[in-house]
Length: 339
Image (cartoon, rainbow, N blue to C red; front, side):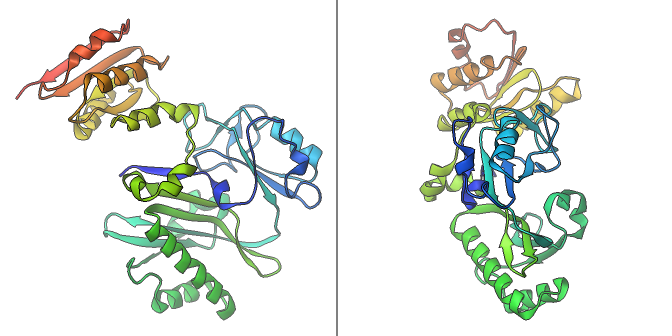
C-alpha cells in the first residue's frame, strides 16, 4: 500500500515559507514568550537530528525575533539528517513556528493498521516526544473496530493504564473518537499525535501531528490531495505516478526498470545480493507504452548518480525499442523473459 504524508504544519497555525524574505518577527509567538521552530520534512526524529549547517537539531526554542532569524538562517535551505532520512539528509524549505507551552507530561498517541490482525489499532505511551523511537516496547495497543470506534470498555482500560482522572478521560475519549472519525473518513493509514501533552496548567494539548493517507483513495480525497507538496527530490516520483509508473528513489547507482512489483523487488534484492546498490525501484506495470517507457528512461538518466541501467522485463510484451529514443550513453543490460 502506498501512502502520502502531509507535513505537520497543516495541523497547526503558522509556518515560514522558504527564504528569509518572510518577516520572522511577524510570525505568531516570536514577540514575547518562547516559541518553538520545527523543520518541515517528511521524516521523523527531527529533534535528535543534525543540520549540515551548524550541527544543531531540527526543533529549536527561541526567545526573540532576532534569535528566530538567526536560527532560521541556519535551517532554511540546509539539509537535516535524522534516522529516517537518506544519509545526506533532506533539504528544509519550510519552518513551522508556534508558541511554546510548559509541559508537565508527554504522551504518544497514534492510530494505524495492524496488518497481522487485519484491524486498526490505537497505540499509546506515557513517554512521548523525541524518545518514542527508543521506547517502542512501552507502547500500549488497543485494537478496535472502525464501525464501533473507541468503546466505553476501551476507554475504561485506557483510563486504568494511564491513570487519567475522570475529567481528563472525558477529553481524551473525545479526542480519540475524533481521531477515529478522521482516520475512517479520510482514508488514513496513520494518524499520530506526538507529543500529546498535559501542560503545567492541566490542559491536554496536541503539540504536533503526522497524517498519512492511502494513495489509492486519492479520488475520494481531493481536498487532501490539494495540500500535498512535492519537493525537488519527489518531483520524479510524482511525475512517474501521473503516468502510472511506480517509482521510488533509493541510495544506489544502478538504475532498474522492471515490469511487476514482485519482480522489481526480487531484482533489487538480487542486485544487492551480488554487491550492487540500486538507485531506484521502478515498476512500469503491464500496460506501459513508448511514452511511459521513454519517461522511465528519462527519469533514470536525469539522476546523476546512475552509472548503469538494468532492465528486467517478463513476458516480452514491452516496447523495449523505446530505449532507442533516449540517446543514453549509460550502459544498459536488458533481460526479457518470454513464456
